[in-house]
Image (tube, rainbow, N blue to C red; front, side, top):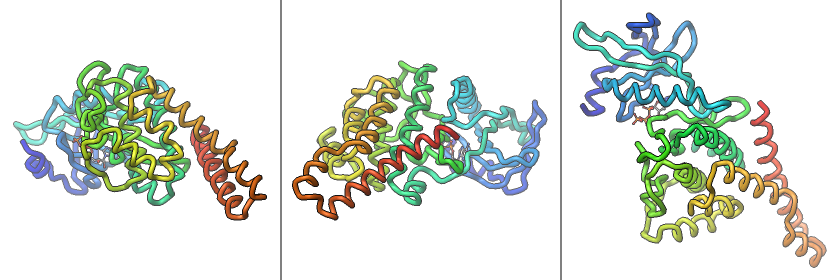
Length: 313
Ligand SMILES: Nc1ncnc2c1ncn2[C@@H]1O[C@H](COP(=O)(O)OP(=O)(O)OP(=O)(O)O)[C@@H](O)[C@H]1O
């Protein structure tokens, strides 16, 4: 069945009630949040609380996504995906029953909208958070797979990055279940689609690049060279090229290695800038250079501060 038929078949309006057949919980539909190839997600209320409810006519999809969410909850300290609240069936008519699951509603703008509102200084901060969560996920034997800005929501007063679509999460060693070309190393000719940490780290680097270049670009056949050109031409990417390029090349074995490199890069920017110092000594510090160096240090200092703050909250 195509998505359009699936959608029209559900077509749940505000106020519709979904009764769980087995757990007898009652959910009130507020609005549709989105529909994908595997089902429709609704914003709903349960006992006055907002929740996200995903319903599908394909029971296998529900089981497989629920299994991923369950394993997420076992990943200690991980807040990457939404927490799972309920799994049940809905008796739609005497002969039709649909499976659904209920998860934590993650409220906030997607990564692109957030960066657009708050500025590029947030990109490395959020990438540090993402890498911490990926490290835990990888240690638990999973690879996220379909990492992209649309699947990343920034939520809370102390901004925290969260993932909403776990449909691509794959057990290590298997073939990646779901991917989006731009973030897929296979598309760029830079690796296989085997589920391994380096797959997610490549996608993380592409998310970084996409944040800096909001419109996606197509490959021109030069593979890594094309991506390196893009990195070198953009101010913030150039600052972090020592992280982004090795991730594209699959040189970080773990998310923690990449996170450490990103931290070191931010730290280096804050504490030393030998060329700038030499230049300013020679020229007795032109005011523009001094202001430029001050702004850069302030900028990187802010990144570091936001990161430490978000880890504490
Ligand atoms: N837990 C959640 N909290 C808030 N919004 C959510 C949540 N889960 C899903 N959404 C919203 O619902 C939309 C559809 O979610 P879904 O997981 O079906 O993603 P999809 O990629 O569009 O679909 P599929 O993976 O089935 O092809 C998302 O784009 C997002 O806007």
